[in-house]
Length: 460
Image (cartoon, rainbow, N blue to C red; front, side, top):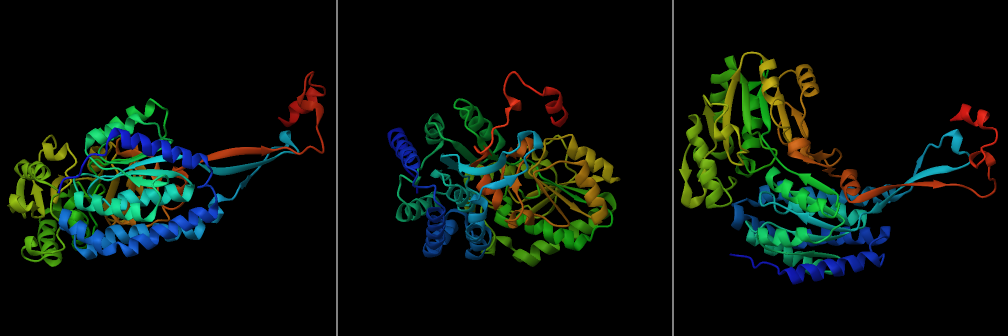
């Protein structure tokens, strides 16, 4: 299936219509926002089967994984916003210094306006609709752009959104990077983009033309350290799960492994055992093992197998876009597999003799989206304090994204801005400062010619 590009004229008409609709004030009320969140929740339930079928067609993603990693996350986000939205919308009290007596200070969250949300193909439902929850909650309109690399999912989302919302409020456009160019030439009030750092730079340059605020959820090479004192079997189980979830096509998948040298052989054996436990003797036959999105991505990831010694896995089937979970040893840090985000089920392994070596290796590179440490919690806390990443786990992988009560986002090369829960509401809002001054008294000290300045100066 190939999607047709939405025309520039259609895109321009939608942005004009959404700007007019937002300007009407229709999206501002709390009751309106809550009703739209409920409509989105109902649509997810109604469209669950078509969406799961589309995810299977495009990515060989099982229904169980589709529910766990896509649908349930969006549903949980909606519930969280419905539970807290009225409180988030209230005017917040802030302290006012004596010098401003008798004024009072407040903060009110106002919607930024017309939002553009651009999503990638790896979690095409979650990474498009989770930000949409924040846009609805904040009172914005939204133009959604799914990835053309998952055409069945993109078309199912378009039909679901068209059935659920008026296009002047929320609508979907389709197409390739030409369409991205058309979109970025329009003026939006906020752009939410999830993708690679290279594309994030393009988005940021385009946004600069209109001084449009951006949330960039990017990627990078997320390190995983297995230190002395780690539970090797448990570490292997959680690393294999994090690396084979969505066939490694996850922005926060462990991208490379740094392991304490004496643990090398134990970890290799544990890695092989955990792959068999989760995916059977032949992962190709496992309906829960996702396929690489297309042939181009397959060729790129398959080429990484030449960058080290294969100590586990290594089987390929290009006609099925299948790559077996693979562990590489004796990898050169300057090789391609250690320079580029892998986005596939290939895990290069480096050795260290002291954890300070691993910390130095991580910190001299770009800041990653995720950081994983396996070992004593006390040491993990210290190492997190000496490194930087968008998020982190001690003795686990991936799971920090599952908690809607903590923010998710990148730092530096891995992105800017954050979302989930209150942070999603804030991502599409402007926190506006308001000072309220009564009229029953008007103290003369602030006015020229500044009488009693000596006394006033003491309270400044």
